Length: 177
Image (cartoon, rainbow, N blue to C red; front, side):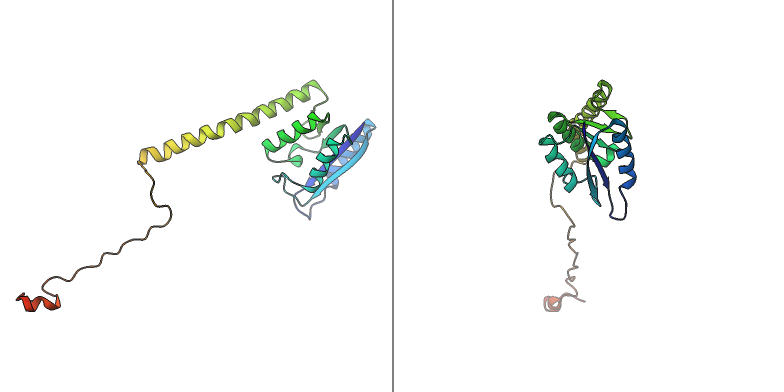
């Protein structure tokens, strides 16, 4: 079996070697041929990463049969992106294994875990508009806010008008000071 090992570190001063050692040992125990993909200094929140993009291209070309990662958060921190990526891999016939969480989609239990993750992501996506509507209703309605200018307001300064008795022309009208 051909395996893709994916490792990622967030900063350039970190080394992915600890991840790769465990991934290589796992693949060696199973007698798998290994192809490594490593992203150095790239955040897991980014959907586009050089090694991950190459991995997806190679998956579409069927250059490996299983993707192995050290932990799920090494593949990505955004659940929606993770689910889409894993669905894309599954559609090309690539299994997924994570050592940290023990997910292995080549087994029924592993597929169940992946489906639960997908269901949670879908549930979160469905809740966002509802929560936004509730938040707007609770915030705006009680305050009777109807719109208006956004941002800092310029305050009009009150300028006192001179009283008639102090006005320069007041003497001409016979008003005493």
